[in-house]
Structures are given as C-alpha cells and as structure tokens.
Length: 307
Image 1 (tube, rainbow, N blue to C red):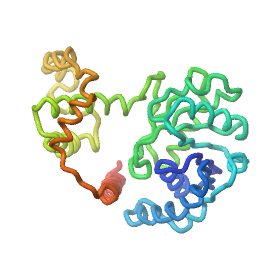
Image 2 (image 1 turned 180 degrees about the horizontal axis):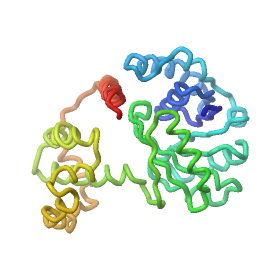
Image 3 (image 1 turned 180 degrees about the vertical axis):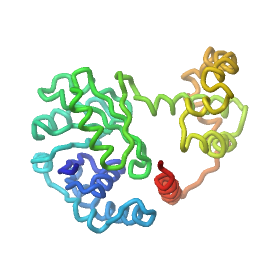
C-alpha cells in the first residue's frame, strides 16, 4: 500500500513523518506556511534517512530521499494525494483554520489526519463538509524512531476512515493503537501526565532528587516498559497473574489514588525547586542527537527481536 501523502507543517514532527512515508515507498509532498521551510526540510530528511539506514531502519535511503518534494502552495501540495498528515501549531484556532483549508482542497477520498497531541478531533472538524474522513494520528516524538501512533476519531469519523488510517500506519512499520472514545490527551499523554505529576511532586517536595527520579525510570521501570506494558508487567509480577496481583497490592495503590498529585505541582515554586537541583547543560542539540542515536539502536534491537 503506497500513494501520495501531503505533509502539512514541516517542523521536527513533519520531517519525521516525511522520512517515515518516504522509506515506505510513498510519494511525499511537503508544505509549510513559512517561506523556505519546506525546501530546507528536504536535505534534513535525506540526512535523517541515512542515519536510519546506519541502524538498519531504512533499506534505500537515497531512493527514499528522492521521493520527497516541496510545494509552494497548499492547494498544489494537496492535489491528488490519498493521505494528509497535518503538523500545525497545537492550538484549537490553528487546527480549525487549517482543517477547513485541508477539507476544501484535498481530494474527497483523502484521509485527513492531525498530529495533535491533546486536542480532540471533534473540536476542530464538526462544521466541515468532509468531517467523516478526519481523525487524529498522534505520533510520539521522534516519530521516525518511536513507532507508536494514536488513532482517534470524532463521533462522526467513519469506521472505514479509521481502518484505512490504521492500515497505512501499519504498512509503514508504525505501531498504531485505536482510542475507542474521544478523550483529551488521548492515551499516551494521559499516562505520561500521571507519571510526570507524581515525579514533580516527589522531586519538588524533597523525597528524591530529580536525577535519581530519572534513574528510577530509565534504569527501573523503563527497562520493563521498553517491551511490555503495565498490564503484562503486573501479570508477570504475581504467581496468579493480574487477579492475584490486584488482590495482593491494590490496597496500597488505592491509598495512592486517593491522594493524587494536585495541579500545584506544576506551579512556579515546584518548578523552581526542581531547577535548583537540575544542572544547566547548554548542549541541548547535541543531547537531542545523542537521544536519537540511542533510540535508533533500541528500535533496531526491538525490530530484531520481534516474533
């Protein structure tokens, strides 16, 4: 399954989507409202594809790179495509404005997918004539290295559109999951938010240093979570599986659930308490590249271990 895809908005997420579609054999069209951004993205995508190839994650990086082109107007970018992946600003007004344009100019049978990380699809598609083909396809940053995609439709999104989107993401080697009912933040960010709030509370209130908290996840929970989720984890942590685990430990977890971290954990005093302990490191771009290198190696290992 291949075709033409319009990548609308070509920042970090848009470039990652371009690489994903291109290595899967799709004709990739780039558009960005900011002048020169789409053109400048092409060599960046080409470099990224070769990095993927170095980790065994792209078979023909040069060929894939030649599939990526920039377009001067949104209408020309959308002409004849079968799939649109939108990566505009994460604001409701921006999504409403952009999706009105996408719906007006994209072919009537094209899927319109948004990379929105929290905004529900129904909030920016309700008044569109083609709202039945609109949905969320939320990736995890960086998408070309972390394959999960959350698919979430509005109440009016057709089952056929959701199924087509899932098939497209699967064909490209991503790992789609379906959000069965609309909810703000979808699944991943709600899970991440719960952990992050407790992390802020524990570090800001002096129970642990921010560095040791990160080690708790990276060298503790994260090792298991890199290949199994929370339900499988607890199933394997008690002799009788999930039911046995719940019988043994839910008293403790119920007490934790009764006292959740409050919104104030993100307020200035808590943030300042954490930053006072967090060393300033000016080399953020280099550290991001190191993260991507390690993620590529981990992704390659996981691919090699797939059943």
